[in-house]
Length: 337
Image (cartoon, rainbow, N blue to C red; front, side, top):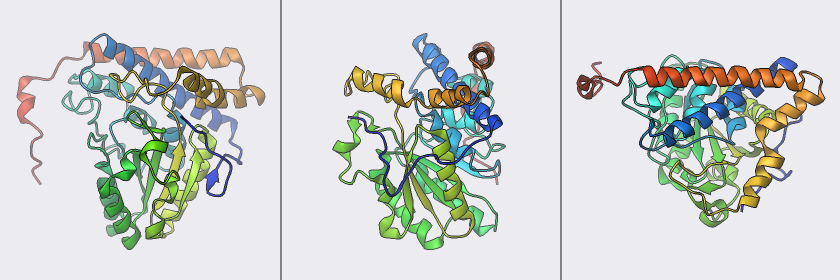
């Protein structure tokens, strides 16, 4: 059964106020991720996207809030549920969609697909298909920043299921020893594939998993973009001050199955409907915008129309982009340093 964060020590909800421009920005960014993912699900159903495809619908506030807490110079690395992270980092929706459809115009020239996209320009170091495999890599990126004396932080995203992997704790230990500037962002969507957190985790408070290494952490309402931003700023400041790593457990919820092949029969329709009705991250910001007289319903519809047009354009680009030439099978195998 899904749970929402309780107000307790170690738990953060938003107490700060955002500007009108910020709220509109967060609203549009979250809406772009959702509409993009809805289109991706549609293209998958049409057979235009193959292989694995893990949608981010419902979790938009996590990455939008965290990216609002860093600069474009900071690094980002995540797992296979990665499309939302790419868009929040400013990667072109057309390039992301083209990669999903295996086309030459994609970020990995059609050879990476859903789980393996990268952007050196945006400091996005990929989605990774191995559960927890990105955590040592994110720790290494943070080591690079410290070694070179750069004022940069690496946001390393992982899921609640990945927290139980051994390499995660090896990374925690090294990051704490060397005081590396890494924020471990645990996206706790409460179901590791199809197993609820209550059944797969003996210790339900995942933000405390770094306590043995002296790593501070806090639990955050991951459906509240302002709460995420607030806690993200605190965690990033901790890293920039040379105090070492920080753990954020972002309690969120995915509306779709683990992947497109998952019917999600392990949870009830009532549970899903309750989360959508009472905790939807986009609706929460929409209410702030309306109640604050920042924009009216007509204005919000215009934003949605604009976002849908951008996603439709990305889908059109993806479908019209050619497939990679067969010669691409033999490229990008080795990097000539």
